Amino acid sequence: MLIVMKTTATERDVQEVIARAEQFGFATRRVAGAERSTVSVLGSPLPDALREALERLPGVEEVIRISKRYKLASREFHPEDTVIRVGDVEIGGTEVVIIAGPCSVESEEQIIETARAMKAAGASMLRGGAFKPRTSPYDFRGLGVEGLQLLAKARAETGLPIVTEVLSVADLDVVAEYADVLQIGARNTQNFLLLEAVGKTDKPVLLKRGMSTLIEEWLLAAEYIMAQGNERVILCERGIRTFETATRNTLDLSAVPVVKRLSHLPIIVDPSHGTGKWYLVPSMMLAAVAAGADGLIVEVHPNPDQALSDGAQSLTFENFSAAMPKLARVAEAVGRTVRTPLAELAAD
Image 1 (tube, rainbow, N blue to C red):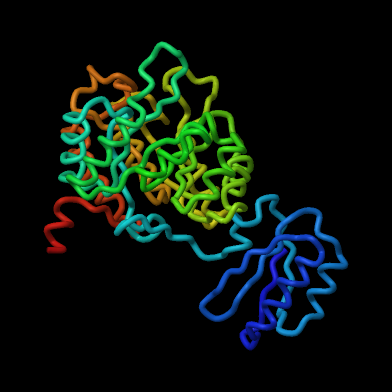
Image 2: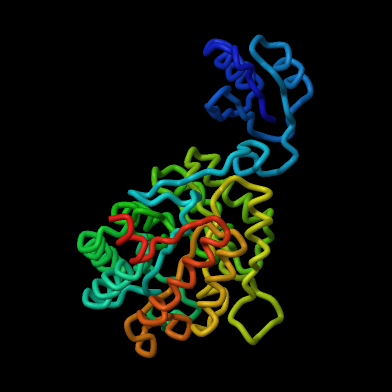
């Protein structure tokens, strides 16, 4: 339920609305707009008696019942697009944000070399896994805390904010100490205890879609995070599991406009996991931007053939750099920008 306040409503009027909802046992969230405030009442089912009580309060313009099961993540609750700031990077604004780096941090030389190359090519943020979920327990599962420390060195060297995955509640504190953005991977999309835990942090959260997750379930996963007070959620479409075997997953680019219609949260696309084939990644980068994605997260490795994980879907530095000017032209065609080296020089 969304309570829209009149433009003439006072602070006392708003506080009375919040108090009345809490008397009925419901939590609230307040959103201060440019001209008027709104208050969201969270929970289900909401009794008619509460609606009637709120409608009678001074300063209340309208009481709207939000039809979606997810409230805070819905476009009904927050009509304007949310822009999430990470350092000097804005995700959800006019710039298409490029996050790039290796699947796994393997060594200091590898991550520093990659970070320098990504910044030179125009990436705004650095990705890299320190704690890795692997299908087989015998595969490389990351360097752990050492990997986080190496990511921090790469950030100090280049200034690129870090996006890295947190696998469990037990790892959360140490990952949050180093990361600028906490990534929730596809396998943990419905790990509700972990979602609630990251929801209690002050870090932005990149929430990947699960391999077999409906869009509504994905948005409800975001709701778990937001209900704990952290509304800085970035959605990531990374492909879903279908009957098709020609690609690792089926990249659902239609999810971008669907999510844009249903939610105010920014959405980025992962064409690396979405296809599993490096030679398909550049095309899907272009298609994702054309579809309206707010950003991309791409796997890039100095020597993909020697990568300890996901080498088959990783671009080389050269392939990544070659894709960026094309990406800038597609972004311009849809009214967006990409931070390419040429754009950086023009800005200077």
